[in-house]
Length: 129
Image 1: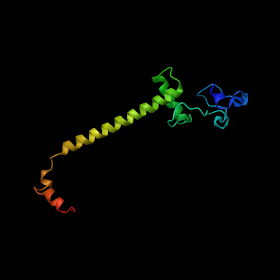
Image 2 (image 1 turned 120 degrees about the vertical axis):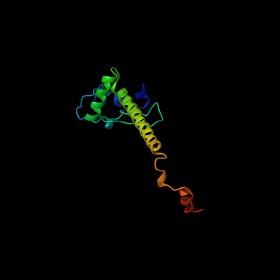
Image 3 (image 1 turned 180 degrees about the horizontal axis):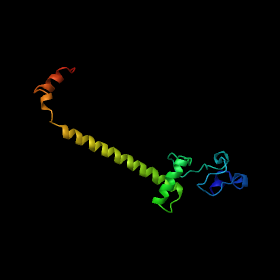
């Protein structure tokens, strides 16, 4: 048992320190991170961990995710939302890059009269050696 390994058995057996089963409904105002034994010293990863408070905005996003991925626990839905958001940002970045490249290619060579035959040589002559 993890609690026994962390020397918190006395706290976790006490009804005053028990944490109720998860529900995404608003709780009674109790702050669980202030209770001993809420967070164990034995963590199965060395990577950073994050806590997210379920605000109304996050609850709506989780409810929407539950419709897309039914049967998943809300903790897994949160991970799926982060992954989907990251994928969307990457897609947007790729779209922006493609649009920029298309604009550059569309304008390439369209204004030859703007630059004389020795334009680059003259420009480089001003550069320090």
